[in-house]
Length: 253
Image (cartoon, rainbow, N blue to C red; front, side, top):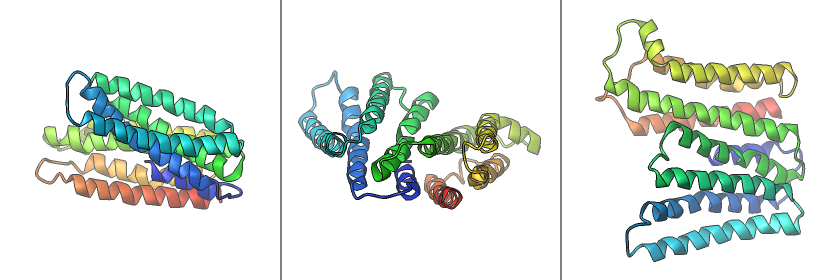
């Protein structure tokens, strides 16, 4: 969710400058700073010996982000990075608010996080090329849509199906997966609209074909507790993410 949007932004950018490497450092620092901050929020009412260490790593990761991003904004003149960074910062504050309420793993919380991570695509595109255009916006949207679908799919396979007996009829299994399948239907509809309006390449919806097949098959192939493997699910998600990235590059280049 972090790497794919960044790489897509870099690869699809019309030109490429070495300054984009600083954007990768800034994005990495911003991603890593979430963890010590989240732990600090969770333990804010308790005195622990680890707080000094957590603050130290927060300063290190935050410093990496500020220095790298600051160089791009003030020295390289990429002012729109500051605007996108501010939006990302607001999303981080919202995430920390959810952490304080123990709701960071809720559906809404995870989707907000994915919207923030998908920002890596237009930010990398802009840092690499100096351009911020329609392609950058489309890259943000398709990354957010793709990884948003993984949230629904993992919840289906990990939290929903293992808790229920497998329905005998295929139709009943599809009904149980209605949230996952409805999300994918909406995502495909948006992509088709973008392609029809020529706001995105005509073949853009093809990048979502493998993951759509995965979702339909996953809704039919019921997951029970005995066969549930988070490692296997994780590996499958990585493979599909690589396939998605490869298709997007071929379509946009």
